[in-house]
Image 1: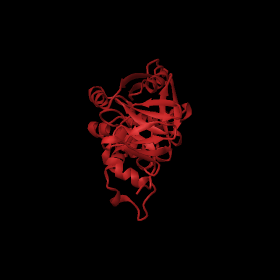
Image 2: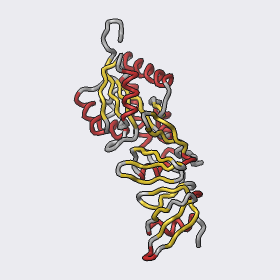
Image 3: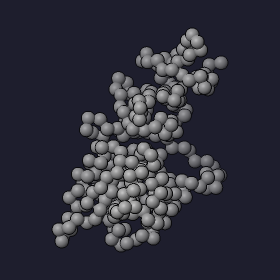
Length: 268
């Protein structure tokens, strides 16, 4: 609390992972009034109803993404914002160009404190114009066609290197290099790492877009495999198709993906 004994302001935490919400709440609750939204739609509603002083905004969520929340609220009306993300790809060029603060999960207390101090300073200085300009730059960076902004030599794409997962009350980091395959399970994606399985709330298409296509291949709407884990391509009666991985796991391959997979595997 400040010297008068009152809390410094209102903070809106926007995150669909319970443990992340709890960790942030534990850090902030003694000094700030906390509200929580577990999806983008609710975040937009709360920003419109009673705008907070600061928003801790997850980039990837069900419904609206973090950037879509900014678009819906409007950069001019958006409070001071710190973006959080478990995915490296979302914490690179666009955020740096816009000079918008972001945190890559799992972040340590020192990094969080640094971001919070910077946001609080902007709020105290009432630097609304600069914050609005930052958010507009961020949205424009995302929306501008690559051909209009890219230098003559194309940049190397950035792919996921690690994924944060919540397990047994802890957030741990799973290196993408250790993932054998990924399967869909309702609203979750299951990362299969050796004999262990980790569930994250993410769409398969989102993961497929962020994984190196030279390493991973989506063989079915419900399965992504690491190509070097494939041991054999299987043909079954009736035209069904599957792969057998080196650990013996068999996964179905959709007919639409069969020819491309054969080509990727060097099968004529």
